[in-house]
Length: 142
Image 1 (cartoon, rainbow, N blue to C red):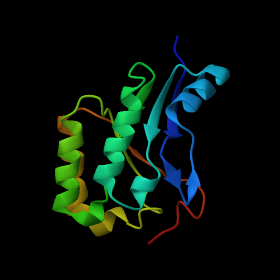
Image 2 (cartoon, helix red, strand yellow):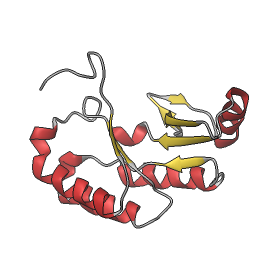
Image 3 (spheres, rainbow, N blue to C red):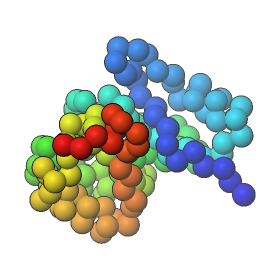
Image 4 (cartoon, rainbow, N blue to C red):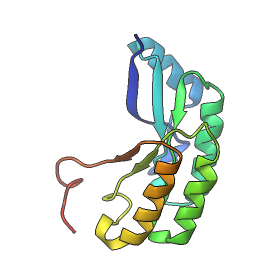
């Protein structure tokens, strides 16, 4: 049986703080008995999704049997977000998507048509889509 951590972040920096490198991240997984981790960006929620998706993939490719990268796009960018979704999901290494509507400053109803297109793309590629929510402020209404 494998232990999978389905919600981790592996990025170069977040809010001005340097984050760990891939080797330290893997060492942490080993120390805690986690076999596989789904990894998401943090900085990509705020800026330049394509760049951060590419960086995440590069980090995941160092440990392909341990790290599963998820795509992040900004649905407020409309057709550009759909195009980035398709670009990433054409690479079979990306095996899911993650959205954080509070941090990304969108309500699904505000970007309904774009989200429909993104979700259709995810369905075509048979990947799960994770929406981060929870207690306030993460679950506030718009």
